[in-house]
Length: 345
Ligand code: NAD
Ligand code: TYD
Image (cartoon, rainbow, N blue to C red; front, side):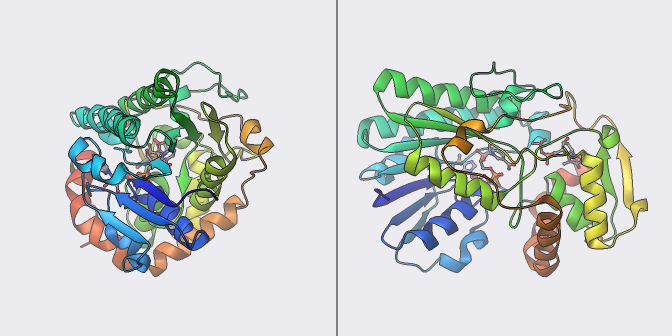
């Protein structure tokens, strides 16, 4: 461990908060600064357990604004960039501009601040496997594969990856890019498939399964993702890209994941509601080769059935956390997108 100060962006979101908790637990001598503006997806409650720690500080600010970023950058040894607009369904509407703005311009602002104020820092760009686009089975793209993003979300993330790598070459910065598959686990905003279906199943509400449910995602537990990121910061090679994923075998369709959730919640299969047309450009399959990061010594620990059962238990035990979201900020999007109320209330 060679860092004394770590700047994390988007630490009040799903994966960022897991990463901050992991850092806090693992590195007792490190100062953690979390820059998060709190969009609808940011929630300081995700980090309530360390909110009063003298080693942790949350600064409410926007990664797109140098005035917010610069004061936090000086002295940073590691910069880990999670902050993003992250939901594909929001990027297929008139909200797409926010994705370009935050994911591309926000990444530029952070890199440019690092170039000026912490050129010796190590930077990790948190990317997604969705930049490779729709992958026919049984292909597993490696890090050299062509990028072919399908949605404005994944296109904006591809732009961010390119910017990060351009700063490595042009300004000789220590930059790496990780590209992870779909995550699941505690504190995930209930707009994504797994927490949406778990919370709807717990409330006996319909589970809106898109386009027949035959699509494949390579689900990885968020804790396993965070372990991979720590390993990269400690042992990754500058200028390199690393795919991260579970390589589920067999691969699971959305319908199979839904059945797993129904079994774990005890909800009725009749809740499944087939929906079409809600995900224009819907990618059939995401998958990646993870040989490169496995050669560094990482492999996922969680097994999918158990992981889903534990995740269901967490949501069942943390109703307060998600009920506030579903009856609050999420309600408007849900009603507009799915055409029905977001909660039984
Ligand atoms: P999330 O939507 O849960 O959280 C995003 C966080 O970023 C929120 O706390 C939000 O307030 C903050 N944020 C947004 N705009 C900001 C801005 N302008 N300035 C400062 N903070 C801002 O996202 P997540 O699911 O935790 O994803 C985190 C990162 O990981 C993203 O970059 C995403 O593209 C990437 N990723 C996610 C997945 C997944 O399955 N969720 C998989 C691979 C990669
Ligand atoms: P999602 O969790 O939004 O992640 P991503 O689009 O980034 O992979 O969606 C995962 C899969 O689940 C995707 O194939 C779309 C599907 N899906 C549904 O069937 N119903 C839903 O309500 C949502 C949100 C997603």
